[in-house]
Image (tube, rainbow, N blue to C red; front, side, top):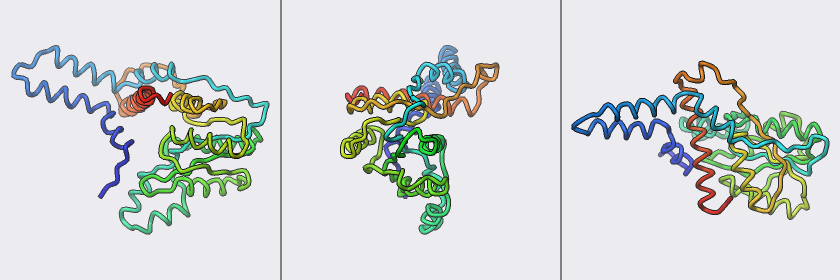
Length: 258
């Protein structure tokens, strides 16, 4: 039986095509189909399927980096969600032992791979003394074990790697990092995560009394061109990513976590 996390459920309902389905269903059930309704549906589908929509919104959503490359941080905090969990689950579905083979022999990273690679660069360049990872396990896949294998292959000194508490989301990461830093006397930290995620992550960390400097990765600076107004799969995917961050930030704000 498939294992679904709360994030999986959220992703389902945040699919940009989900509202279009209901709009179409309402129009279908109406005895009289108005041109205004059909026009609304077409405009919605166009808006969520062109790259321009997310390009404009996310360019204003990003926060500025505050990293000081002339100093050394006590720790570079790399947020989780880096490996492709679904890839491991798909391989494990055929053979229960297969997942352990891939965990030890291969590192399949997802769209947030730049986070860990930037963390490696920060430690190797002397920008940070320690690379601080979360203890993350989702869908039976231990991300931390996979990343430790990757770091070993990248030649990172094991003495410069530390793992803090077991977490399932960014709020838990912020709380766990605070506890770890207080226990180890860590003062200066560099927060590394994706540009789209940084506003929410930074706010959560600051709410915990931490004041990290920020280093965003995967900042998409693709210029706006004619292709930005052409509906595409990439446009739908970018819109989904935009909605995920906006809704996630709003949910945390309503709950008083920001």
